[in-house]
Image 1 (tube, rainbow, N blue to C red):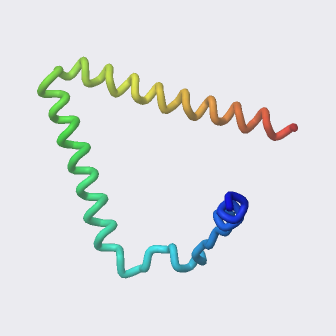
Image 2 (image 1 turned 120 degrees about the horizontal axis):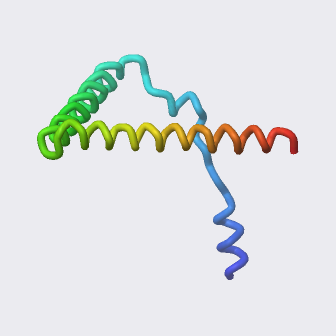
Image 3 (image 1 turned 90 degrees about the vertical axis):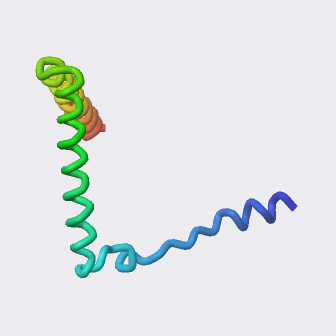
Length: 85
């Protein structure tokens, strides 16, 4: 019984890639989503400045930028080392 269940669970049905793409008429939803995201980012930045002040906000942004830079460096080094293997 357990071998029949495990053999059925190995069947994976995938949809074609063409059906997973976003239609061109969907641009208005992407525009609304992008504008909403930018507005929320601006509101959050304003809230941080009002709550903590400009210097703490600048420090938090600097730490965030350094974290992103470190992630890129680690990823670059990891892919550079694995190419020769």
